Amino acid sequence: MSETQTQKSVKGNNDTKLVYKTNGLNLWYGENHALKDIQLNVVENEVTAIIGPSGCGKSTYIKTLNRMIELIPGVKVTGEIVYRGRNILDKSYPVEELRTKVGMVFQKPNPFPKSIYENVVYGPRIHGIRDKKILDQIVEKSLRGAAIWDEVKDRLNTNAYGLSGGQQQRLCIARCMAIEPDVILMDEPTSALDPISTLKVEELLQELKKNFSIIIVTHNMQQAARISDKTAFFLNGEVIEFSETDKIFSNPSDKRTEDYITGRFG
Amino acid sequence: MGDENVNHSIQDLISKKFKKKRAGFSFERLVPILLFITALISVLTTIGIVLTLIFETITFFTRVSIVEFLTAKKWFPFSETHGSYGILPLVTGTLKVTGIAILVAVPIGIASAIYLSEYATEKTKKIIKPILEVLAGIPTIVYGYFALTFVTPILRNVMPGLEIFNALSPGIVIGIMIIPMIASLSEDAMSSVPNSIREGALGLGSTKFEVAFKVVLPSALSGIIASIVLAVSRAIGETMIVTVAGGSTPTLTWDVTRSIQTMTAYIVQVSQGDVGYGTTVYYSIYAVGMTLFLFTLIMNFIAQFVSRRFREEY
Image 1 (spheres, each protein chain N blue to C red):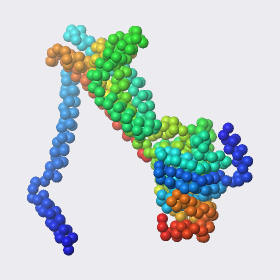
Image 2 (tube, rainbow over the protein chains, first blue to last red; image 1 turned 120 degrees about the horizontal axis):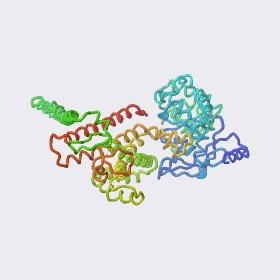
Image 3 (spheres, helix red, strand yellow; image 1 turned 30 degrees about the horizontal axis):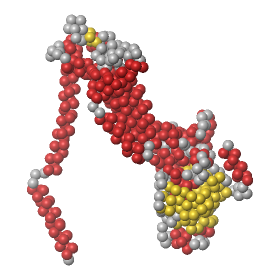
Image 4 (cartoon, rainbow over the protein chains, first blue to last red; image 1 turned 60 degrees about the vertical axis):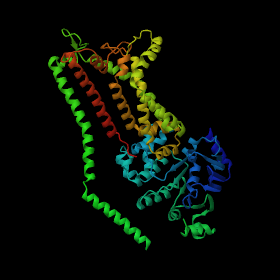
């Protein structure tokens, strides 16, 4: 029922290419005002990068987009985040449904202590897909999609913890792709990886954006410049500047953005 | 200038201490020897107990054949002329009580562990966990009278055929006794599953229930099984509750409503009665003790095997 509702509102909206529309988002951790009046739009099939120094609110913002932020006690949120025409901050929005549409890849690889196969089919299974044939197809398609199939196809039934850190992270991306979400949120997905694994994940992102809209938080400005279409610069809980990545890195309009990307602080 | 002086004198003090140490006798060398001796005490005691058990058991088997011990269907040791020494009725008594205890303790213990680890707030956890641990500290004799004077009468209201001494009531009470053990150890195992794994599951649209049962529970399985095995060996070795509420009639039947005798309760009965030293009955308690020891030893091996075999690495 809610799905048809979502589709209807997408059709009714002229801006069909908008995935997320954030309006006047404010967030507090207790007394600490962590996000201040955020305005940000995310366009379909683009990579949107969020950069900024530690503690600027970039991780907080991305966790608000799939409401994982609710797991932290004492969080208060106001404003609205409209995803495909519906405000997800509305308590009546079913959070489990949101998280099947908006997948997430975390900072540290966090596979389940199960086999590679079981990791990938976990999502489809809890959402009711039981047919072994379909599950097998999902596993191959997702692992291929995450560019890890060739490395693991002969050991699908071994424990995921036998994989290297970079492989584990790509497995987590495959696990996320297995339920075919609309958006993939990535919270510093390469910060725990070595340079070669990082390169692989970055190459993968260029493939992924054909099918998914991607929002990525990164600590690494070069990474943002390499992979993203749009970049938002966060500072002290505010969006200082948000525009095309090329423009941000070649011709920033705000002095603070320039100072940050040229390495004067942060 | 002043700084240099301070540095100098401190270095002097330190070197004085080193000189003293070198001259005096070495405390550092003595420590490992002392600690080794204390460790040795418990090892030697264990070896001593096992050897006593083995020797006295051998003496018993020179009088009663091992075949009779393992196959005879009656345990009737008090007659010197036509006694029967079949361990099976005592083993059945122990297994019945243990089985009932497990049926009570495993579901309740694991359910409480899931509640404490996945659902309870820090505040609730801080109140409930100490209470559970108090339950583990109650003397077993208290549990025994609780079984005899409280649980048995209630059960007899529901089941009129229940004998005053039976397997059901002590079984249930032993189950209650080992709940804290299963709950507390399983809760530790589940709490040590890293939060990042829970977040991964929630991020895929899992409900809290799915996270608890499909991710956390399987991840903590080795710890949970180890806690159950440990609780089982506790139930097998439990003595006071079955002595008080189980009766002293060894019978080879799976009927839980009838009076029983467990291996432990038999040993208590003989140790307290006026059985002469050197009689067959006297030696029989060592054979029963040996059997009991083998049971708990096997459970210990299973526990070690399980925690090694299913160890999860995060």
